[in-house]
Image (cartoon, rainbow, N blue to C red; front, side, top):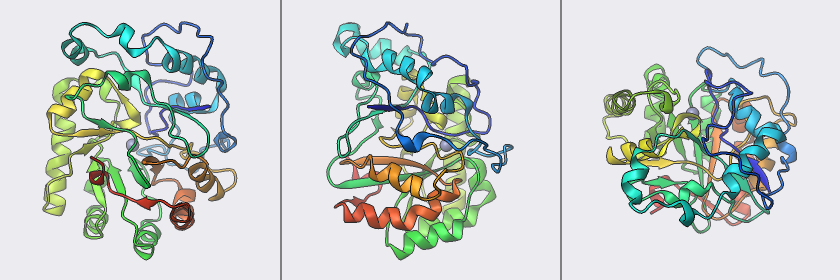
Length: 327
Ligand SMILES: [Zn+2]
């Protein structure tokens, strides 16, 4: 089992590499915690040099990088998250009320299992209530690619062409500032039948914002989407860096959005050691029913690999879906 923590990348990932896991739960040592073995493809190429840091989502989030690439903190996190006591044990009597107010910062991650098997997910997912709408894996022979566009846009022509040539419809979570800067690209995505959804305006850690600020991030995005495309934004939301808390999950849900996490992610904010082979292998080695895949648009290797990814995933018996196919 390998643990893949939040691989959401960022220009300004708040915590540094040495930051402790954002959990307040004490890392009670757990005998049966799964062994952490970073998958080979996780070994990052060293320098993130070519990524422009200023607005680049692809600039390595120190925090995520640490969690994903260094076994030590990862296993600590895993011990905390992966094992804990059974969800029921710490469920308060009146769960909803208590959960809604819980602002303990959380970071999304999953624990990889054998090829073909749906990964394990953090225990807090078991506490999500119906008022905390969230998705992290679907069902059946469907795969949901979700491109995360919080940073560089990459080769958008090749991206659009590859999707069109393969007649594949996928999902995009785009930061508002990119939508503002590249409205034609957004319109093209929508015209081509892709799903473009809310990833906040500024792509910052929502844990660090007030409720009013979070609402504004989301509402401003929706407004800009409407101005840009003439359509209402689809009701899906992704927390930048996968950083959230139970309270925010409720807040976003109350605003009509389903929060979308993922069941496959890659260390794709760094140059890939084996070029496009890496994203291809990362995906094929973790392919499972309902797979929600996080890929960063700013990774050139992702876009280079996309044609083969689509063809190989189909060869494996899966078809691509939009998030609104999941219900
Ligand atoms: Zn993002």
